[in-house]
Length: 235
Image (cartoon, rainbow, N blue to C red; front, top):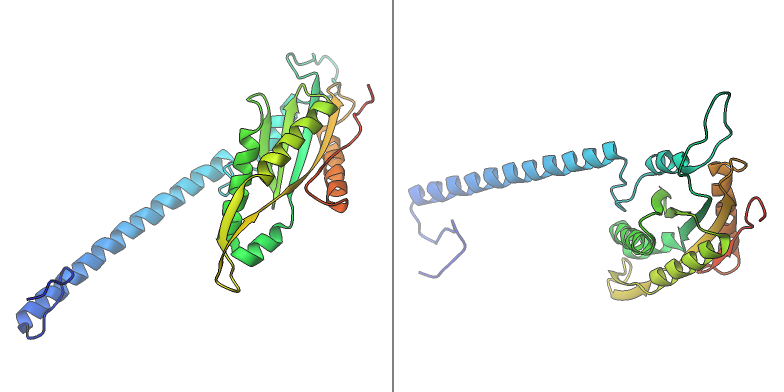
């Protein structure tokens, strides 16, 4: 008798043997369904915990809401009557606004699963390239923001340039959805930077807006580059 997979039925088996094999197969299916259900429930529980913690499930970075709640606590604000200045605030803040270049093309060419993988890898590169005292979060879509504490405008541009090179040096491989061919590819980012003296004269929203505008200038002037906005207020 030739070897076969578990619960396989040889030609000429008795009806009793067929019924026994069929019952065993159904039991295996039920076990697999139960295991799959448990795995899905566990995955949903993990996803819910990430949501509650303010962690983006694709990049494992803080969500925009979580990031803003953390960073705005670092920004000096005008004091109200009887309010005392907060201690140990950074003297300067710089914001890096990074946007993945031609990310839609990655999704269209290699599929959204590969796009998520690419975005997660870029987030890792950016997170690994900043200091423990800095902050990073996913702003939305393919946008990632970083706040550097006690960094000048020149230091922000230097750090952004380093991060840009880290991302450009990362290599990916994916299946072209149209041709079915395996292809190697790279991805770049454009980064706008803005910095300010943390003296309550500039809000966090204004800092984001300046860096966002600088990022679009980087996009419009060729992509894969860093553009720095003026320091506010001027030194």
